[in-house]
Length: 338
Image (cartoon, rainbow, N blue to C red; front, side, top):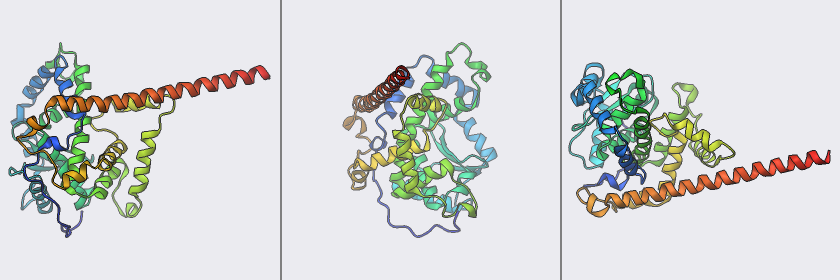
């Protein structure tokens, strides 16, 4: 990380912005689906009881992480307060740095969410990229994701059999529902990451570094964002044969979408013009969210999103089946000639 925060261009602030402004159409719908899964609420209550609720979760980091402030990681603290100003959020969430070898960050808690940056993320990312990461986590805070993100993280990390207090609950459907929602919530917060930084290049660099970045001089000048976006497009359009099935199976146990998927989703959001409209000041304000965009509209938008995806998948499967049938027919005709 650089020794001081570089001079940056002025970023637009968003007075009173509501989180629904940037939320992905599948995010809130996936959350409603999760809440409807039998046993989900019971799982939440029992896990919170096991870890001691919000106080227990917070104590884990108070006891074994560094709390960021004006005298601890002052550069990161400055970035953090800048992000809160950008989103017009008066309450600056507590921020911790945890000694962890995996590049990640998280927003945890219930009534008073707090943010944790893994130390490896600080080593890997420059100041502009750390601002993206902090903005992403603020997106989780403002969207009220922290409780469900905490439960999803625990379910992803702990073996289902290691939680005897949850005996008698059909845990696999609950776990899969939590992880599905978690992946959709990441897409929402990726948009917040861009809004907080207002730097598309740095935002896409974060995805690229999460996918395959490294530390040391040997990585300097060796990564190219344009090539990574081309790779993201290639992944999105590679759907031969069983590719679609493989993609689904590869993501079922993940709390985050694939890095290339995140890059492609964000690029599509920018291309839609929604990002520029928000930067111009066209967004939903807090307090008007339910009135201006009721949940049924989110469910309708999510339905269209999933339906479009389903149509694409159906078309791709049909094309793959047609090609396979043509290959079999060609092979049969060749055998008849020989």
